[in-house]
Image 1 (cartoon, rainbow, N blue to C red):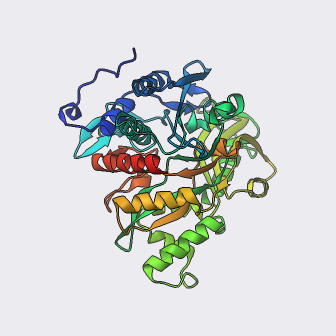
Image 2 (cartoon, rainbow, N blue to C red):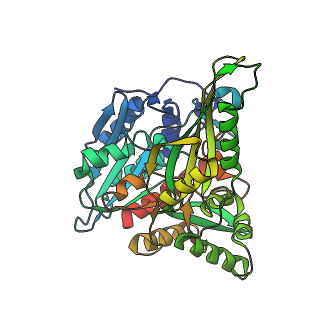
Image 3 (tube, rainbow, N blue to C red):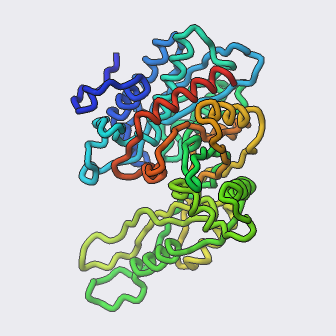
Length: 443
């Protein structure tokens, strides 16, 4: 039997509800995914999740794409099996966290000041916990979800899902038979617009392109005049892309969001720039600003092997996010920007998505949120990042971001994603479980 790592923190003496307890337990499994095939693996966390599902009378299946890289999937029979199925999914891996930069151990699961701290608290072991707690509450009460559910806890999302969701979609598509829609992370959280709490439902995702830039030059002694310096060439390319302000491109989703923001602010959407409108969306602007235009962010540099040696090659990794369908055009422009002397190697790509802000699921989400927070507007938005919904879309499954959290106005939620001192309010976790339970029991 898998047990949670035995650690004692101040939070152990706090009376936590089931959702917070599960989230804390999951944080204590170090499932760091470093990318490039390096990972601590999700096996122990997957075993923990599988045991929780078995305790509910379900039969989870575990899939190990590579040693230690484990995903968990279970099917839950719904009350009306004639309805199309719904995939409810999260991921078990997290990005690295340097303890030296944190005020708490990122893998202690510390509870302090009414918040749960740790890597994965918002991305996305909070949603994993809400899934287990809300489903458990439904099944233990003798109820069934309204329709068949496919519950998934995937590996490798933080490296593009190659060993997780994409592996399952390619090798085991039958797991998702009958499902037409999905819900997962980075949506359903609240922000404040002109002092009014509003919820953002993620209805789209930008496309993903991870590239490597390779600059070549002449190797030589560090004291010489080296015109063809690979490091200099790379630095110029990196600075060009990092400082590039791409033009605003509004998708249908973003245009709809801006119209709703303008309505709440009582301004003319034609008279206020998109950038200005986004800056007035509260803390959510951290996500929304990146949805207005392509972004090209350098993230890693590699060059040289000794202080007094000019290397003949230098490399950089760049994270490119563009609008759905613009991948080829953006890559061509990136090549023009850095010049023909820089080789561009595409390391990984994934599609962009845009799903209508309409239909029965969207209406059910709106009704559910309004039951728990009456009068709060629900707005669509395009996620500047990506989720495992990209993989599921290859099976024709329409994915939405809905991990509901009611947050205080002062909490900069987007800054928690991949940030230092990641944390989530305990009362937001409880709210999320109640909302998710309501949705799964009625939709």
